Image 1 (cartoon, rainbow, N blue to C red):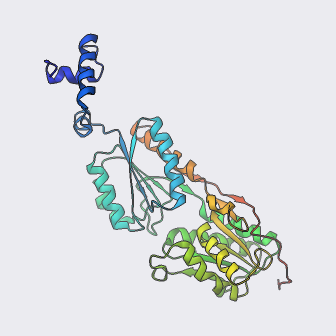
Image 2: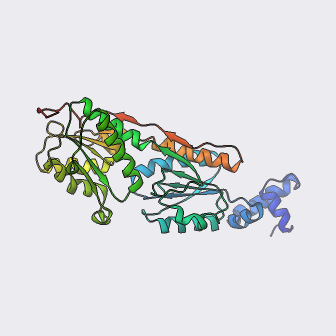
Image 3: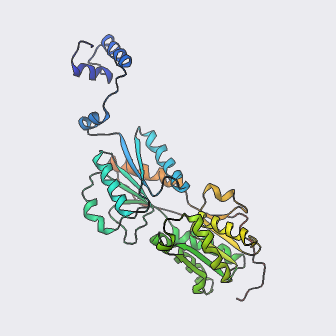
Length: 334
């Protein structure tokens, strides 16, 4: 249509100075009139750059990962990179398959949030020729070959438990999730660390970790609803929950059972999701810097692509005090 070679059209659409201005404008006008769109795949094959990154999340509906994604997108957009995003649904085999698909799509790099990939995937991962950054590795036998942005979960649980001890609680329970084994173990250890340092003992019935088979696809809020009564019946006056959604389910169970929060039971969550400040009463929780984690992961990926030296990051917790915790209201044995 333009009466010139393919290479001249390509140069004109890319504003090459090798094509005079009049010809460039004529070719661009023809492209606009005909609705021509350059083939991004063909361009990436020639340039060896796709201008895309892959992001693997555990869930597309979890508000935690929405904030992580926003952080990644902010930095990626500033670097003129687009994202492919998909979910692994806590399935390591699906997670591995998604990473391989992203690689086949010639992404520049891959970020995985809450990875479940253990060392048994090491051979398949060695075939991936682009940088991979992990946010909060969750596999029990975790991959160590990749750079990570992590949150100090053990310190976070310890901080939350110390807060309850400072309020005078001595019968403190822990409500965890067995389908996040590594993460749950770290939080359970932090809870035990605080009790041990304070010279307090714990009882087996005060620690409840809901098994993966018992969870069976249920949401965290539903797990909290059904599991909290067991701890309440064990006589605890305060409780640390694995995350905010479990804690919110626990608050709902307390309302249903006419258990006053925090007069009869203090409850602490973990993550500081937006919903934590809107439930009744507003939830005391451990804040994870979710958006910052996404930003740092993408910045690390850009550094790796530029062959700059990078260092893994471990972020510190902050306790957000709200109305779901209060000094113990009845006398307890020390």
